[in-house]
Image (spheres, helix red, strand yellow):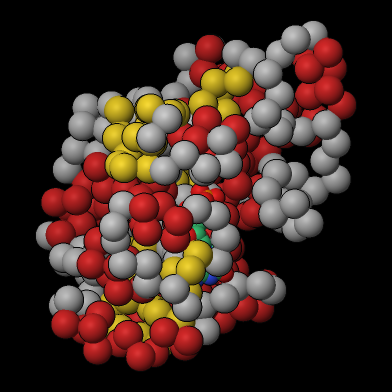
Length: 311
Ligand code: GDP
């Protein structure tokens, strides 16, 4: 069973870890959003790629919910003293990743190659694949004007009201060759419980991707990131509400209509199952809150069973 998992950061990484515990490296490729990538202090920062990589490497910071375990921020303090903007919190250890990535890119590596090198050095054996080697920039269209995603999300803490999201470059950015290969070779596709607007949205916006998933021959399984009418973490619920979408697993299923065969909704949302079914997606009710590693593996096991590759 070769699985292609589509992921953003935190929610995606949790299910990816569960899947990685059940599938051998050759059978799992995790394609990750890069629309949130940004340059800070001249360094190429890929927040979602790093969240997935650090999680699979067992290096993520459980207390902060992002970044690396044992992190400190002395370099950032020093940068602040030198007049640099420090609203985007880059830890001392994390900076090493961005320095290395930027150097590899400068030497001519693609983002796919740089990601592979970093992940393998950190002990990750499953493939973590950027959605594209070319730049895509997620822009929040807000009542304070257009804001690059990290500007909206981190600096402005999602306070400006959003009226839309624009994905600059997405219509021209080719899916990375590793993503294209994963699509061609996969037996099943899994949409991790990631933000549908700014994590999965950019991946689907790349040329040919939506059509390839629509026409995909194998099972396509999604997991709702909205549980009990709210996001487990992050701005997905807030963003959906401001865009006038229904903030529930039904709202997410509506976005993914035509792209999914099965949609895993949380037990607290069981009452929505019929409405989801009316959208042409067969619901599957399960516990989707992934707090412990056992939760992640249990949900991954359910997803694999739905994909027909019971583990
Ligand atoms: P980000 O790029 O770091 O925001 O990460 P993602 O887009 O991958 O994930 C964000 C989404 O993951 C949010 O909408 C959360 O509600 C969802 N999420 C986080 N943890 C869980 C979980 O344990 N279960 C489910 N079902 N969703 C989760």
